[in-house]
Image (cartoon, rainbow over all chains, first blue to last red; front, side, top):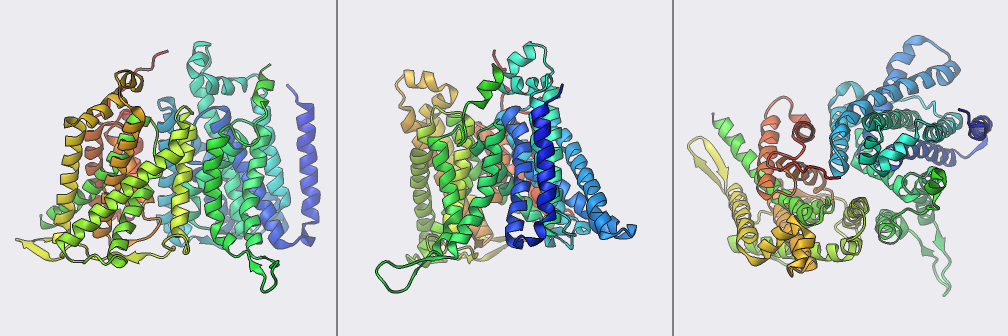
Length: 332
Length: 301
C-alpha cells in the first residue's frame, strides 16, 4: 500500500534537510546547536509516541534506549573509526549512518527484551519495569570504565549535521505514520483502545506490543547516536530518569497518539528552556528611569516554571495542548 | 563473623528507613491507586526541616529532647505538606485517568525539587552538613561497634512501624482506610467520608516519609535537594516487591532491599548497588507480578 502524499512529504523533508545542511556553515553555531537539538527531540518524542500514545503502553525508560544507541555509536566512532583510515567526509557520510544504525539495532534488541515483560504487566507495573531498566542501563554505563564510567565519554566526533538530524526526524515521523495507517498498524490502536476486545477479535496483542517497543527503541537509539555526535560528549547522568520524563512530557503535551501534536510539543519544549535562558540574559528598561531591570531571575526560575506548567496543564488540559480529534478522523 | 553482624545491622537500619518510606507509597496506592512520585521529595523536605530546626530555630544538638523535637517538627510539617499537596494537585483529578494523576505527581515532584534547588526560594543546590541530633557515642558489644545514632534510628523506625500498625488495625480511622482501599464505592455507601480518609492517608504517609528523611540524614549526614530521588525509587521498589497496597509487604520489601543493598556494598560489586534494587524488581515482576505478599487480581471483562 502506498502513501503518495506522505512519501512526497518525506522526500521533500529530506531534500530540505540536505539544502539546509549545505548552507549551515553560515548559521550561528549556537542557533544551529539548538535547532539540531530540536530534531533529536522530535525523533525521541515521535518514537515514544508509538509506544505510549498509539499502543497505549506506558514506558518510563526511553532515555535508557537512547543511552544504548548513544554509547554504541559513540564507541564505534571513537574506537573503530580511527583504524579505518577513512577521509573525514567518508566517515561523516558513510560510517556515521552505519554507526547510527548499529546503535539503533542494539537499542531495538533491548526494546524487544523489555517488550517481553509487557506480555504480563500492565499500566503502572510496566512503567516501573521500564523505569528500572533505564536506571540499570545508567548504573552499568557509570561503572564500565571502557566507556568512560562516571567521568563520561569524551572526544566523540561531531558528525551530526542538519541533514542527519532532520532526515532522521522526518524518517521517524514517516515510519510511525505509515505504520499506523497500514492494515497491520490498526492493531496498535486496537490494543490501546481495548486490549481485551482486541484479543477477542483475534489480534495477537503481544506481537503488537513487542513490535511497538522494538521500533520505538530503534529510533530512540538513533536519536541517542545523533545526540552523541552532536554534543561530542556523553555522560551517564544525562540519561537518567529525568530525561525519560522529559520525553514523556513531550508526548503528553502533544496529546498521546497524535502525530503532529507530539512533533510540535517536542519543538516547543526544546525551544522553551533556550528561550527562557535567552530572556534571562536580557533586561527591560525601567519606566521610572534609573537602572534597567534585569531579567536574570528567569534563569533561576525556568525549571520551576516548567514544572508549574506541567501541573497546570494536567489540571486544566489533560488531553494535551494540540488535541483536535485527529484520532477520531482516522477511525471513520 | 563480626563483619557479617555489622553488615546485618547496617542492612536492617537502611531497610527500616526504606520501609518507612515504602509504607507511604503503598498506603497512597491502596486508597488512590496511583504512584505518588512527590513522596520522595517529602522525604527530602523532612531532612531539611530537621536541619532548619537546629540551624535556624536553635534546637540543641546532641540531646535526646532536641532530637525528638526536631523529629516531631519535621513529621508535622511533612504531614501538613502532604495534605496540602493532595488537596491542591491530586484532589481536582479524582475522576481522571491514572496517567493524568501520575504525570501531575511527577510535576509536583519536579516543582519541589526545583524550588528547593533555587537559592532564593529554597535551600540552594549545595549539600549541607547534617548536625548530630542525638547524643553520639560509639558503643562496643564484644567486637561489634554500634553508634547511639544507629540505635536511635532503629528504635524510632520500629516504634513508628508499630504505631502505624496500631492505627491501621485498631482505630476507627484505620478501619476506614482499609475499607476504602478494599472498595471505595462501598466505603462511601456505609458513610465513610472518602476525602477525609484520603487526606489522612496522605498526612500519615508524609509524616512517615519525613521521619524517614531525618533518620536517613542521621545515617548519611549530608543533605541536598535531590537526596530523595534514589532512596525514594528504592523504597518504591520495596513497596512493589512486597506487593503494592499491602502494608506488611512494604515493611518486608524495605527490609529486604536494605539488606541486599548493604551486603552487595560489601562485595566487589559495590558500585552496582543502585542497579541491584531494580534488578530484583524486574525479576519479581516477571515471576510474581503481585509482589511477595500481594494477591493477584483476576481481570474481569
